[in-house]
Length: 131
Image (cartoon, rainbow, N blue to C red; front, side, top):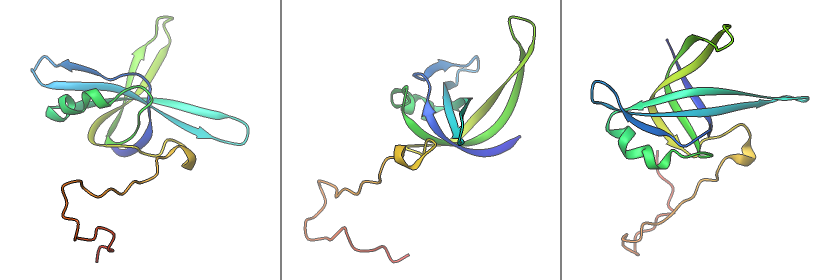
């Protein structure tokens, strides 16, 4: 088992299901692309997020959403319909962040700083943090 950080875009809306144990699991695929001079390669990683976070994040993990996941990577082997051996890369997600890089800097969302609406107006929020 390997731990990896994966940044890409969700390929289809996530599916929230109940496992036989009763735990909630959110399944989704992330496309990770790599461009070279003459071509672009894309691999798909099947991701699973478990528990209460799966339930809370299900409405937000939709097709096209840029995100970054941290989790344990594994390889699952299977037999295709034509009888050949295939494999899939899977990730059991431990952390998920929305708005990750998805292959190039132009597609990464710019960070946005906002002042909370209920914050006192006499407290400056643009001061540098001392650490």
